[in-house]
Image (cartoon, rainbow, N blue to C red; front, top):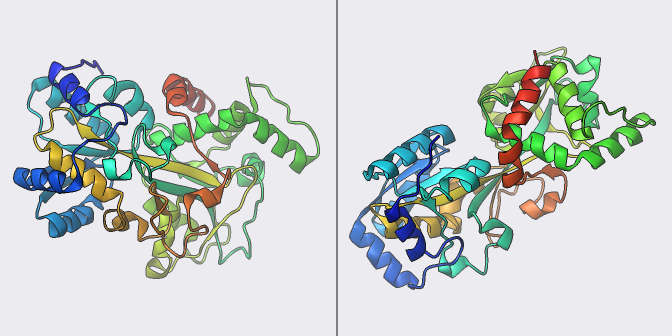
Amino acid sequence: MKLRVSLAGLALASMMVAPVQAQSSDMDELIAAAQAEGSLVAYWMSSRIARAGEGFEAKYGIKVLGTKMTDAESTEKVVREVESGNVQADIIGYDDGPRLVTELIPGGYVVNYVPEALVDTIPESSRDPLIYLWQVSIFGYNTERYDACPITNVWQLTEPEWAGKLHMFDPRLRSMQIQAFSAMEDRADELAASYEAFYGEPLEVTEDNAGLEFIKRLAQSKPILYNEDVELAANVGARGQDDPPIGIYTLGRHREIEEKNLALGRCELEPFQGINQPTYVQIVADAPHPNAARLFAHYLLTDEGASPWTGDIGAYSSNPSLPSNPNNPYPSVEGWGNSLLVSDNARVAERRQELLDFWITHNR
């Protein structure tokens, strides 16, 4: 992708005081300015943008046209719109942090904005770029077949017994999986120590680090790959299986256990038990409704605005004062401690292609 900084985009960035300084207008002024604009266009990675938009319109009288898009789709549209000077979108919800911090923000296509009223509430680590949501993915198992998770350590997934029996996201299609691989490299020492503690002997590392060693062995075990996790979780939790798989999927799929009659439970593995995926919110450069976009960013960080996501299991607002679903294993994302993989955006951006090539080479 060829990135180009527009003068208008830079003007908006300076006006909005990038990267994390909030606006100076108070809420009453912002609401009035947003209502004068009257509408808002949002590109989002989740279909729940429709519910959030309905709540926003009911509260402020501002119509939200929300469209679900993959990160790749919204990236293409935003870049094209800004470069052509025909911007349609006002705000985006985006999972691909590495692309955001190395391409879209420095390219002048989107601008980071932290609502003034919440700048002291949102943790500093979630402000630049602004995270509005954390979604947890877990290792899950079939509770009809097993009384407890049949493994206790992630290295067991590389054993012959589990070959072809791990269901996971396809790294070629889902940025989140590559982000998880990068985080495994960051925690290579823990992976090596966990192997030795479980097997009683040091890990034989044939790659640059224990993280790559784990990724290689996992690829060679030929897991079943998915783009979406609805079917993934259903295949793990389907009843009547003699030899069901283990899966990595969003914890939110557990909300479907009763509705779909699934038998799903959560594994607590060493040295990590899942992935913590942030979702970012950014205002598009030259947005036609910039005040409505700022107000919507604020709304997403309130209980009303976050509830389309946090009302279900598996999701947490970046605003630590907001509640989460009572069925979550922990009431706040901080409760998971160090048990979830969280990647560094800049490092993922640097390693993305190499990690993908590495996976493909060993998954053949």
